[in-house]
Length: 115
Image (tube, rainbow, N blue to C red):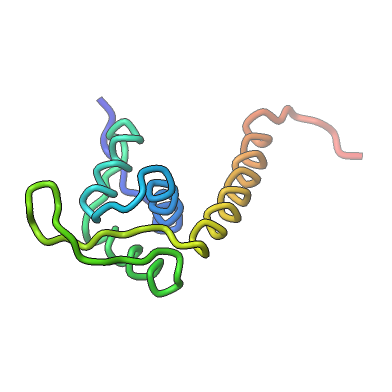
């Protein structure tokens, strides 16, 4: 059985943006559980990691929030993606895809002579 890993700060923002893009407005607990679910429970997202990211994204204008009632009628802050957030998500997705492609080259590279 694999141990759950903590999520890196930079990657968590991207996961939050993508989660809100797919699911629409969601409270912090729901965002954390969805990220854990998508990872196959290999990632662990705790409040101490998630809420600073939510605050930063809100201050940047990538997400907005408002108070509402959760499924169990508790007061909760619901977050939603803004227009700027959608632009940021597209840009960061391109950056991550490019980074992943570069790293993949290193895993598939064979020993070659430089010319």
